[in-house]
Image (cartoon, rainbow over all chains, first blue to last red):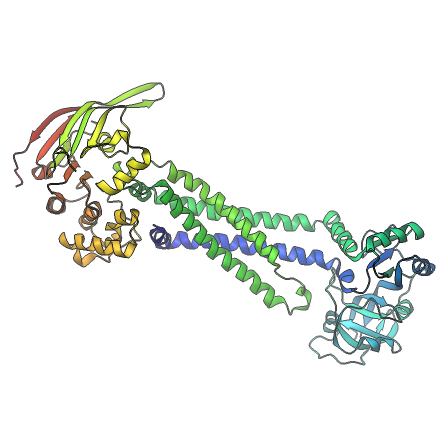
Length: 379
Length: 235
């Protein structure tokens, strides 16, 4: 009976396409919006993700998340270094500046000041140049967005000179930094250089980056640092979630995306459910005839479920394919980089589509099960 | 098929409850159908013909009484066995044909075999042989939308016959057809359905086809009013 079920489905082309469209739409909307949401949330912790050498971030106890910096006095670096279990501790600067290029182009940027001696705090990947070039006087490395916003369409060229906060700096390299939540470019310079070009308060050190000594548990060391210095110490993972949770709690982003995802689900369920119900209702006499001639309820349920599963599979495949295509096409766009379709999103969307199909076919299945085959004897 | 009686009903009573009231639509129906005979069940609308047909085929359960088809007591069968009995032993022809629009004539005619587990293509080949016998050989691959009403009803006849049932029931098989087409359909039905091991029961209002009957059972208000052989007018 499976082949007959499929022929019935394909025979009603308009409803078949309507069902596939409904599922495709719901799949695309849910998977794309959830992926963008996850990408945005990941961006809130981009700085933390890029600093791979440190196990702990030490900061003022009042700091809520990475973009809320309350600078520390320099002496705190020495205190942290004195805590047993700390292999090394280095300063890290995070601030904002305005870049002005010779052509007059101005662009606000995020400045990361990495440790002068070890360059700890740099992102892992260079596109052009070497990290060691940061040791040159007034040197600065920009990320891809920084270069493209300042010199759009031009190939990278080391040695270009710009001003940051009216201080002259020389661009010596191009790095691949994780895109931040705000769309500002990220520039990297030595810690002392960052202090030179950033006007500021008496205290200038944003964070202390710490590596645990061999065998030391990072969380245990974090508690010890907090006890001995009165500062706040978090593992990279904890700090990432601190940032994500802040944006989840304090902004309308999750609600907006949540509404879109729920709407995608509801519209998909409504379109698929209504179309599928109509499809079954319009074929009720045929189902009745099949029942009369001895087709069992189980066979009919199998037919209806096969039809639902097939349109679900096709619609889901097209929707996920379109979503993947969207991210593939936008992966090279600087302002959209970092957004990807995670397998967990694919799995969750598949579960949502299954739920849509279950809801859609439930009413139809009931209609078929309680159908009186005597319906076919009524003209 | 050891019984000499194809269908035997005894004391069939059927009540329908509507709210607090109960309406009795069949009042103790006794009827015997013989193998090799085409019996017509006639009577005014609402007299209980379709209800009796539904009970004989096991679709409805009588309030009282029994139905036996070639010795099988339908009332004693479980629901699933009734469905299986219908699938293997009964053939149905409906007024509205009830063909599946997406299937070809041969595939539609093969449905009882497919329901019993045969692959569609093999079942369609078996159905094609029957369709050719009733002059539908040139239309095997056409869908219902490409067939006239008479041709669709012939496909329905083939569907009712493809699995070799012992009882064929027809509900107003010519009601949706013009006179000439209706007679042609009845020719096909008699030619293919009547067999010594099979009975045919036709519920109809259509007086134009009475000549095709071996017996005419007339119902009125839930009772058998008359049960008369036609004397083989058709033959």
